[in-house]
Amino acid sequence: MPFLLPASVTQDNVVQLEKEGLLNLAALRTVDCASLKDFDSTVLTVLLAWQKKLQADGQQITIQNAPEKLTVLAGVYGVSELLGMT
Image (cartoon, rainbow, N blue to C red; front, side, top):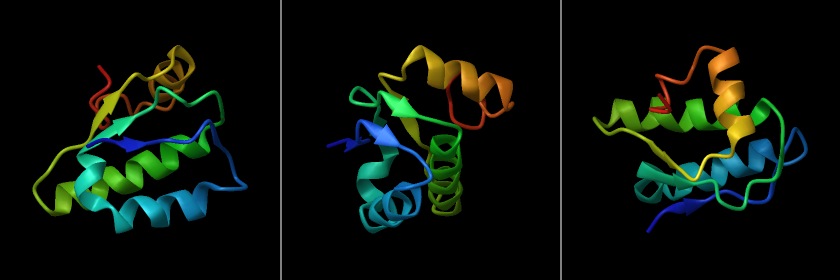
């Protein structure tokens, strides 16, 4: 079962979201972004933190249904490959 991102990921909720994800580490192997509408680059911060934790456990994150803006942001920040978004 994938981890579902909320519709909004900003500075206001990113810390809580990161904690929630780390508590559900098994679900983080697949992150579904279908609901993601309102976000900024902080979403990349949380995705990278989760990826780092998964890699430490020998696993990989998979991003599903990434909005075009997220794909563009990941490219601009040079983290597309780290997040498997290439």
